[in-house]
Image 1 (cartoon, rainbow, N blue to C red):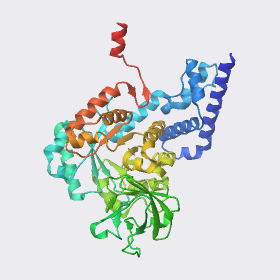
Image 2: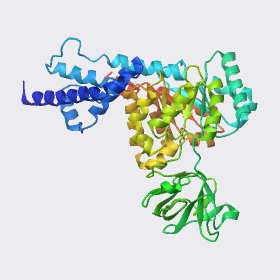
Image 3: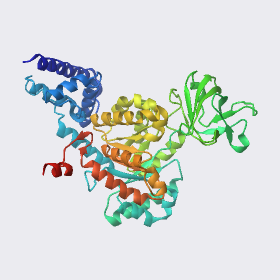
Image 4: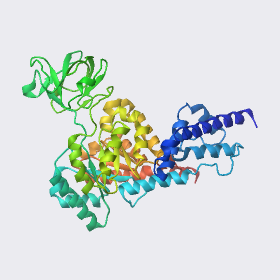
Length: 486
């Protein structure tokens, strides 16, 4: 055996030993999961063990040797390591090869996606979710047109309207699905904690305040005692201010305003404006606030969310969990749903905070206590939280981890947004839409050109989906090669 091959084998043996050690370390936690989820959790552990170190030099060496570089084995990574070791002469004892092979990984994700989102006519195209607007409650024909155009899932945002309107929307979906003989699931999104601005001090009568870079102002609880002559922005979610620490960033209006905490307090904090990217430096009421550096002690599941859950259990096929941050949040919702005495409503974990990204393995583990669940990459708030420049990197990491855990993924926020609003797409958003083929479901927001968007998106996904399966690229015949080689 050459020194190069011996070195490769040694490195792979170490990786395999790390995977076995990770599985052993979490043996007790694994045993409490349903059988199928035990296998998926083991594979997630194997993948995390694989990704603990920089493997790029090893991957280059594997590639040079004509072996698998392990780059597309998320769903079955221990078996892939074992397969390469076998090619290098390593002999495994009888029965020690991992049962989680490539076929098992792919089929697990497909079965769970079908259980969540329903069957679909074209395997190359992810399921398509459409966000409903209020007007659809009174427009059966429009709902039927959406199903004809390819909608597989109707999304109802519980942050808007109310049970009467939601019930009408769902009635139209069920009626149209039956009429067309096309299955369509109903997804209800919990609102989550609403963190919005309110103008308490100077400018409060016009509900906006002028804020410039390098300017100091205050962020306060709604009931705090403040001086109306000062520039004071109120935070509509109680209990947030006391969690702020000096140096924490605070972002307003989808990140257009970026400030930092200079002085913290129980009810009022002094902030310093670092950046204003808005065309006009005026912060208005009812704009979102993000705290990417702050561990918030406020509850993830609000009283309003709790009031919506009975409706969702009675009418929906899955439940979106907004702004989930910890495994404890997931366990709380799972317990509430189990109290209804029927098969648990599948939960979709919406990853939209920096804390949720950091806790993703534990969130996935807690989700695995149920037979099936999903993850949504909620790219709107997530981009604000982690920084727009990191979104591409982080959404890839979420896809990798979810594939390793055999968890279906929804790709959400601003997919073909310009096309949906104006009737014509930008070049960059077409490329972005093609990336959505890596997910199991794509969510569209409400808009004036939804039918056009559905047609365009299916065309894009059909073209890009033919080149790969999830994250694994496959080589279908290329016309350009046929023309060149004849």
